[in-house]
Length: 443
Ligand code: ADP
Image 1 (tube, rainbow, N blue to C red):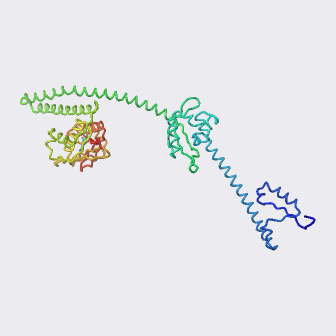
Image 2 (image 1 turned 180 degrees about the vertical axis):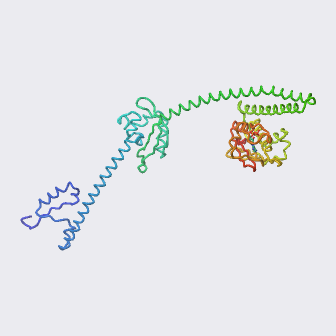
Image 3 (image 1 turned 30 degrees about the horizontal axis):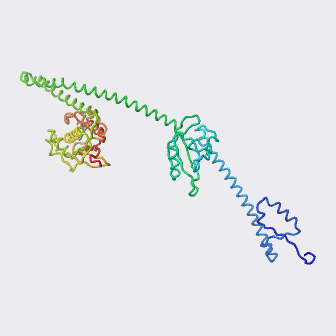
């Protein structure tokens, strides 16, 4: 061809094939091995010299900005690498155990704290199935199941096997990193709560033991006070009876001082008898098994009033907001509670004013709240704390006789029937005492 035709031979190289710093030297070498080099079409396509110079200027500008872009990216890369090292150092040295598990329950990674917690070397733990280290297979099955369903675990308690054969109680917080729809890995944080658990167990055992001891002591004390109180009543009655007999038979022969002394003996023995009666009632509330049954309050209240002369006398002062609910209660205790509260409502009124007591019930959260409200003298807030305590009297005995045990009996009896007691009161504006009991209709 060379003999017949006159032509120039050009070699063509795709520029795209020389990208990257590593191709710089070979490219220079190729250029050197040719007598002439012509840039790509975009350059040689320019017609005039001016246009070519402009193209060169543009290329120089591009090369310059590429170089500074590369330098900037290198800086970013370095910063990223530093950050990555910091983060993995942070996780590796965290005081809480951390591990990752894949969708097949294989441990992908675990930090130092986790390995120390269980006493394994990395190769004895990482790459193994997490189930091998759980003491309770149903627990780990549940954990994996929940995580697989996208749930997050908070303070989930489990027992892990230590390499030395002991068990560690742990609290787990875990969630899954999802790669789109795909289960990536679990982000599991494991806290050792063994000490806390053991301490709680010891505490629990101590509490059970001490409670049993206390119950026994209280039962002994109650039995003791019950029998003492019970035995005290008969000599007291004798005192009262003899004082009465003396007054009846020899009253006319005694001077006024002697009569007054006998009357004082009578009053004191009567009061002591009332006190003992109430203490006995209080002790009785603590004893024995309770059999709760549904009781319709309206007929019971009617009986309570009818069978108690003091209440019957004041019937017109007692208003009942019908209908009243049915409660689950012990009849004798409920009778005692209603009697005590009604008597107080009628008793604690200002001199000269007519008492008004209102009984009502209300269903609240599956319980029935029984209220006994009065228009009486009320109770100063300073005394609110003590009135449910035994002998917690507030008002003077002379004007408002009583033993100070009635409300303590109400509180104890209601508690034994699984209810609560409370009141609201304002001096001079009356009081509303209430107690709750389970609903006797079961709803
Ligand atoms: P008692 O009625 O025998 O004094 P309670 O235990 O029933 O004893 O009541 C304790 C104290 O609470 C009473 O002495 C009284 O001071 C106060 N109290 C109870 N109920 C009322 C009421 N409805 N209004 C005002 N004060 C009351």
